[in-house]
Length: 198
Image (cartoon, rainbow, N blue to C red; front, side, top):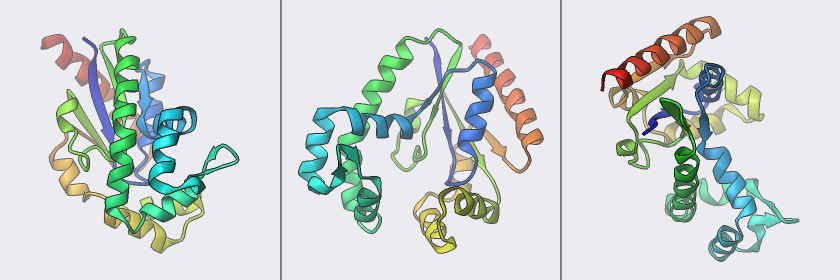
């Protein structure tokens, strides 16, 4: 059975950059956030359930109204949990079907909130990507045109880096591209060795 590596890290840590590096090594990558957005857009069942929960404004011209949803959940943890309870099982089922089709030694599932949802047990290995907090803030400000206080608020709502690192099998300190690439290759080799010897 193809092993599953959970790839996580706080906002702006560079998870997607690291995922692309693994992809370049031939490792299939499943991005849970992207797939969740795609399913929220394409699944009629999900659309119905979300409209029931949030009202008709969560879709605009047949498109998922992400800024409306973000504004609703940002200050309302209970509502976010309700949305997750609707969306996550559908994403999990979609991932299972995708995973069953892979025939590589391992796949990567990129998940922004892995520990926060208590899903550690679903992975054979967990890899956390981290970077200095100021670097992360700057990256997100540049990427998403967000203010510093917006990004700080998101970081404050995520599990601390130390807690993630303590629960991970592998850690990448994503400061420079070259160093990160070297580390990705090292971890890739180590995972293959562990799978071979298991």
